[in-house]
Length: 591
Image 1 (spheres, helix red, strand yellow):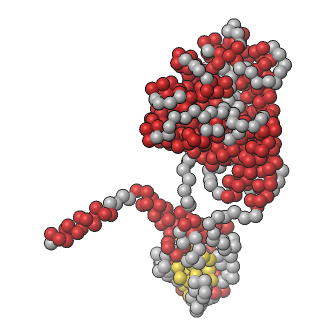
Image 2: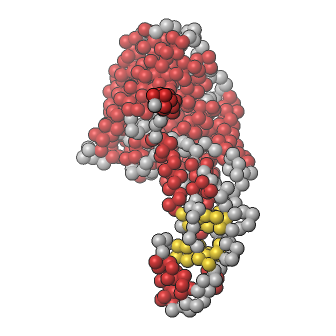
Image 3: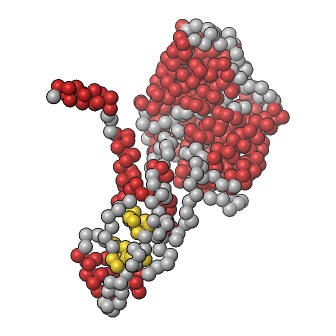
């Protein structure tokens, strides 16, 4: 009978989700430890490279001396990263989220131990030597790799490995920024490619676990405390949406520029191992202009929100940060995108805020959220991230308006996002839209063929073969006297009988009787019938009355296309029902 009949319910989760949730506790803890190691490595490399001391205390590069060493350090760090990528693993190149998405989509959610080790080390070297990146991309990849490796010790499906991979990524992001809700939303909008209890529950468990560990490891409270909002009125929300539209345009320009630069590097007559060194040279020259554009730049984010900056300084940071980030990332070095996007969006919002009511810091917050939501693109993640990382939940409504506006711009202007363009260039297509599977929504009875030509089980095989040869169909169900299906006779069967010179007088019941014939019932969902077809290798199923077992229809591959046709019509057909009714009444009255 093939797979057992599916129990229809709102959700498909079973008790295995509890096992995954327990494993997510371990994954969240390990990912938090990896985040602590990563931030320590970044601080250690920063102190050693720029100030000549062995110290793991975080430090700003604003005080770094503007000497030729400022140009040399990023180049040296980039050469090391290039060598690690060339002789270690090429997957450490870039910000890493596309690699995590690719592992989920086509790699069976299996990531290698090399990536788990080399990604944080290469990112620490890249960021510590001045790379204008954040730690969030590397920790998403590292946490995901650790979750994947942990999962590979157990007998899990690819979907379950994906859950633990994403759980590790969400936990790592939570540990760095203290944003568990935004981390879960990032998982849903960017990494999971589904919204199911099987994945949502373990990912949330991992994020909450990291949030519990974070005060002990990094300290409590928001990373960038802020609460200086203007009165939240309709005008404020409309202005926030306007800032979002402008940030969406800037986001689209950054995405286009990034891949144009990447194409430029690809045309260079040198091995890609040396591209990061060229990017490092640009980073160093940018540091001579504005040292605060180097490194993670969390101090810049804090100053945009709460500090007293001058417009010229912010414009300089915006221009230099955007330029060196684009060149460095397109060169293939290792680093994240979230912190640079926060700085670029925050600086743009801060500058625009001088023409808007309220503190410029509030508009910096709006700009950060909009840039994040529009570039990823992930509007819910951008909105929740902004309020969680600042603790300013009162700003949620204008921030949401800004992120959705930016999201609308980038979705309409760009065919691919900054995350998926790289995957598309490798020959993979990613759909970022979720919806209910129409095959889970449609019943077999709604699409089956009801008028079915059948063959009697008492019919001699010779007569049956002749009927099949002249018939209009490839296969015919064989039924007994009570019209219960026994099997199918196909044209391939008829050809085989001729080759075998089988007895033409033998009744069909002797040839096709099959007690285990797979069947479907009219109240089954079509997805269950599809599962049966896949398990048995059949292209058609007999549909029977569940009470009597009699044949009442046939489900074929052509019938399955009816489900798709219904979905296409729902998207494409447009009707104004009320307008049509008014027109109809007018015509009737005129007659």
